[in-house]
Image 1 (cartoon, helix red, strand yellow):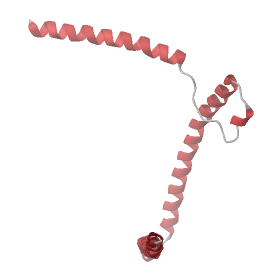
Image 2 (cartoon, one colour):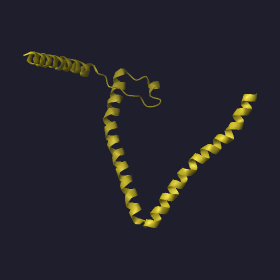
Image 3 (tube, helix red, strand yellow):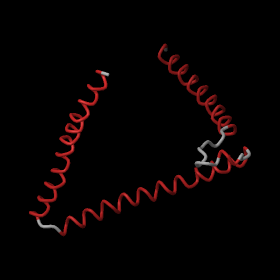
Image 4 (spheres, helix red, strand yellow):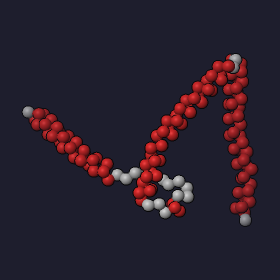
Length: 128
């Protein structure tokens, strides 16, 4: 009996929460302004609020389209890379991997060398 009451109470509370959150969401949608960022130099144009809002809407509209195209480009580049590697022999693939990894292995050494070169400069600056 006690469990039934708790279950009923939880159900009523859940319904109340859902009903109140729908009202809040619909008010938020009505009051929500489109936000964005003006392109460089556009602040100096003294745009009206409606012009700014229109620019933001256009940006939002095209952002999705551009994102889809960027995803497509990423897929095409991966496909291109895969097909190009299919042309190589196993030995050529190994050489390519070694060449790529070899370049990455040299990067930390270059960074360490540049740090060592900068250290005397920092010490000299401290002495002054």
